[in-house]
Every structure is written in structure tokens, then in C-alpha cells.
Amino acid sequence: MDSREAPDPEETWGDKRDSRARRAALPVDRPAAAFVEHEPAAGAGSTAVATLFLVNRECPFECVYCDLWRHTTPESVPPGSIPEQIRRGLADLPPAREIKLYNSGNFFDPRAIPLADHPAIARLCAGFERVIVENHPRLCGERCGEFLTRLRREAQRLERSPADIRLEVALGLETVDARSWPRLNKQMTPNDFREAARRLCGEGIDVRAFVMLQPPFVPPADAVASAIETVEFAWDSGARLAAVIPTRGTTATVRQWQAAGDFVEPRIGQLEQLLDALLPRARGLLTVDTWDLERFSDCAACGGPRQSRLAAINLAQRLLPGVTCAVCGR
Image 1 (cartoon, rainbow, N blue to C red):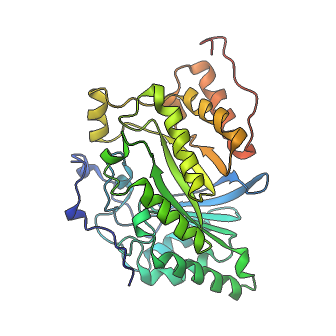
Image 2 (cartoon, one colour):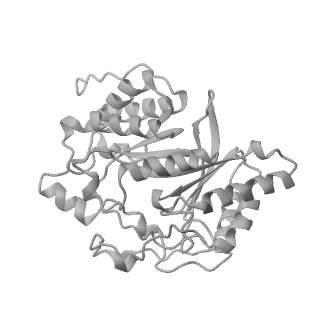
């Protein structure tokens, strides 16, 4: 029995979420999405990652900026559903070296991913070089090490060395800015992240950190410096990779803060500034989220080229020639 359990959702404060009735009715025998993407490799070049978005019970932590509940279920899925989702997702994908199992919540919450499914999940993932899951820092207990042991045993059954498979846990650090993190209902502190990351690293488990660019209550003039401080904190804590995500105003609470002037969505230029400042002194891998960057672009003429440059920098892990635009003058 893991001593670190997810909180009961009835006991946590949440975003009122008046759009709950619009939750999509998703089947639980197939993933919400499955595709192959490329990420930077630890040495050089890139690696293909089979990325599956699993359908499972909604995350109980209810961070006020998170809208991922739209792709979850109100109740726990039946045992066997998650392995079936993985089988179906992989069947439609080309070969990949790594697998990413994202589930809009916490892999090690037994109400989201049934413990009874862990053996089958390990068998399905044992042929990959790296298995990446997402989890809340407060749920990084002994189940993480137990799952790594399962992966290594299954790798041995395939006549692979246990050292040939890595487990990586993605943790939402979000921000270390004291103006913001106490208001996000993340139900953790930066020190909670540090403790979880160091515990995982001590067990031979890799860590990636999610970092928010310009979260609520951090003004635009301070946002890049604040995100840089957060990425540095993640690397100091042992993170192998930091993924920076521009904050979106997609929940009721964040939109209320936006209307009150306490939140402004970042711009693509701030992502460029962050990479320009951090990559030359990087102590780990660094990526920026390039999904839906049109939302953060002010110029139709250079938005696409800037997005392509950021995607290329993600894989190259070095700065590339900048984009200049005759239309907007940037």
C-alpha cells in the first residue's frame, strides 16, 4: 500500500467548471489520441516517441489552470481498459524507440490507472528504450520504483538488459514564483517538487518538468526571467528535461483573472527570449511547447516561420538563425 494517495476530489477546492456537462463521452477501450512525435535525444539528434493520450478517471487535484478534464471520465475505468488502449494505440503507429503514456492526470493514482493493470502495461512497454508517464509530485511513492522493477523484469524476458529501459516521470513544477504558485491550487510547493524529483532520481528514475511561461499574477515584464528561474530550479532538482508551456486562458478562473488584469497570455517572442537566454548555458534538455502557437503570434507573416524555428531548436538543442519580418518589423 503506497502511503501517498491522491486526495479525494470531494475534499479539494476546484474551479467551478460550469461546462462539466460538455465533457466528451469517450470510449475507454482506445486512447483519446495516438501519434509519433520527435524529441531531442540525450546525446545528439532526435528520437521517435509513440505518444498515447490515455482515457481514465479525472485528476483529483483540480489545478485552476488545467482543462485536461475534458478528456477524462468521471469514474475509474474497468481493469483491462488501459492495456487495451495501449494495444490499440500502438497497433496504428509506426515503430518508435520511446513511449509516452500521458493520461491527463497521474499514472500512479490507482483510481486512474488500476494497479492490476501495471503488469500488462509493463509487458506492452518492455520493448521501448524509455517509458514516460506523468504524475503529481505528491504521488511519487514506492509505486514508481515498483513499476520500474516490473519494466526491467519484462525487458529481461525479451532478452534485453534491464539497463536498456528507462522510466521517466513528468512532474508539473509550473512555477517557483511566489506571486503565482500559491494561487494555482496545485496542492504542492516547489520544495515538494524538489523532494519528489530527488527521490525519483535516487531510484534511477528520470524526471522531466513542466514549466509555465507567464502564469497568472506574473506580469509580462517579469515572465521570461521567472520561467528561467523555474527551469533552473528544475535542473537543480535533477530534471533531465524541462518543457516550457505558454499559459493559456482556458478555464473559468483564469479567464476571470484575465478580465481583472491579473493574467495575460504570453507571446511567441517570449519563448524565443527564453531559449536565447537558457540554451547557451543549459544543464539539461530544454523544449518549448509548439502546439497552437498561432494563439500567441501577433503577425501572420512571421508566426509560421517562428513556430518552425522553435520546433527545430527543440530537436537541435542549439540556437538557430533568428527570424526577421518585414511586415511587423521584428
